[in-house]
Length: 111
Image (cartoon, rainbow, N blue to C red; front, side, top):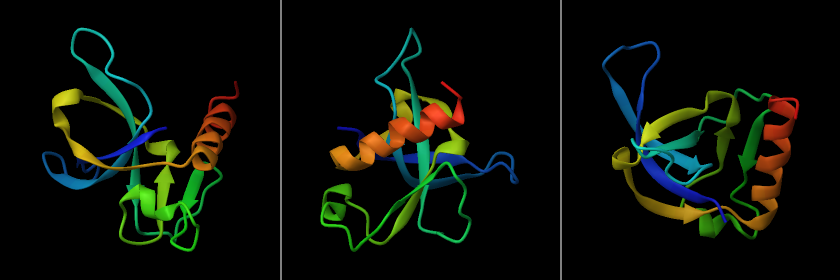
């Protein structure tokens, strides 16, 4: 199952600033610098894209995410960060949501 962790994400519109938010770890640490590819999660569900995955509070598996409210995985905002910047696991994705992540990544990268 894919882990949900806390990460300080750089703000694209405010260089040097970060925002702590949950993210889905899509890889294990890779290479000498132990980089991990993550997808940010936001509770702002207004912007819907074909690469978003809604984690709905009403779903029976939502509790395992460790999130407080309905949120969206933003697969179009992937970043690679050092493992040391991961600030602890808050939850996991269900098998169903993990399958949806894999399918949306195939679509995103036309694999």
